[in-house]
Amino acid sequence: MIEILVGLNVTNPESYKAYREGMTPLLSALGGFFKYDFTIDETLKSDSNAKINRLFLICFPSVQVKEYFFNDE
Image 1 (cartoon, rainbow, N blue to C red):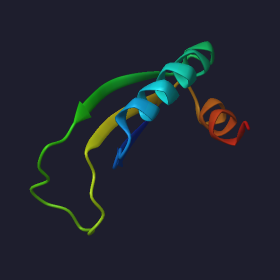
Image 2: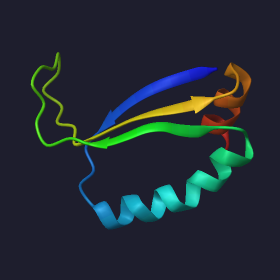
Image 3: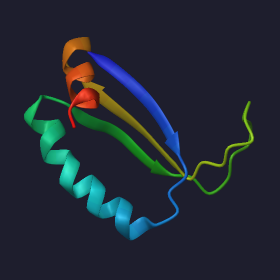
């Protein structure tokens, strides 16, 4: 199992929601899934000045599936 922790700054929640609704079935079809998904109100420690307000753990059954998912147009 490959797990990737992702933090990002969602500036348009409605567009992001539509994106997630569209990509989740594609992820699921490959055996991938979201293990955790959080909205973040406050960051207590960061090694970057980049703001994040969304944090999730995305999982893939293998490195090959992860690479296929992220490289597929």
